[in-house]
Amino acid sequence: MTVASPPPIDPSTAADVVENAILGGKLRLLQPTRGYRAGMDAALLAAALPAGPNDRVLEAGCGAGAALLQIAVRCPDTRLVGLERDSSAAALARRNATLNGADDRIKIITGDVAAGFAALEHPPFDWAVSNPPFFDDETTLRAPAPAKRGAWIADDGLGVWTEFLTRSVKDGGGVVVIHRADRLADLLALLGTRCGSFAIRPIQPFADQPAKRVLVHARKAGRGPLRLLPALILHDRSGSKHTPEADAILRGEAGLSW
Image (cartoon, rainbow, N blue to C red; front, side, top):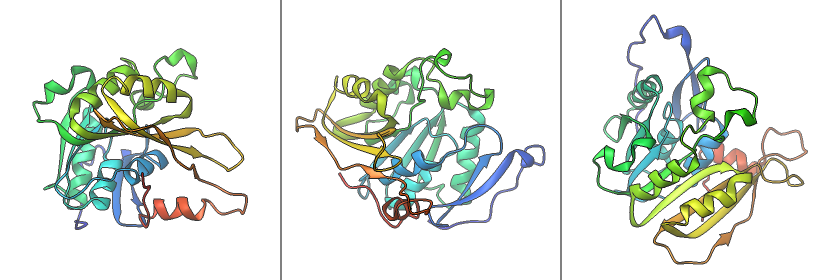
């Protein structure tokens, strides 16, 4: 994937976009200066996808394309589709694909998971991934800024997202989700209507603190036993920003195995 010169920026929106280097400088990512900006969760989601050559991958709620582009780097020769409800974010994802020379591998569709997978008129995928909005009820948290609301609040509930994901993969296909650790039971129950062979990796801020995130891997029609994997520890008390393992993942030098 070749990093290209960026396409022209609309002068009326140039002040609303900032460029970041991610994945150890392998990617250039344009993100809004205000509103939701992708970070650790997108990086971990991409690092957890074991897609192979020629696999077709769908991301539900791709935003500006942070996870999708990292998957494109990590999983060469995959074909990727991103679905995004916010038309501005979808436009930015297309621009990011162009910026990184990935137009031929990445397709961005403006649409809503609430419409269901059939609305995409695509054959089932090998993989579906997502970082769904973390909350169903905005009264349970301080109201997010309007520009961040879509990334934080699942208007139709987590069940709509899991229904979309499980419908979008073929039998034997995989689903990978990152979410709040306290929603793990809900995730397993909802994904379990069509999926099995679960593998769960807790994500802990420090070794002596509870997990705040979980990565969940499942297979459609899978029948294998549930596996609880060793936790990924993001920080230690040495003063470094991240543990060596987390830093290697963020730089694109390592992935997360299942």
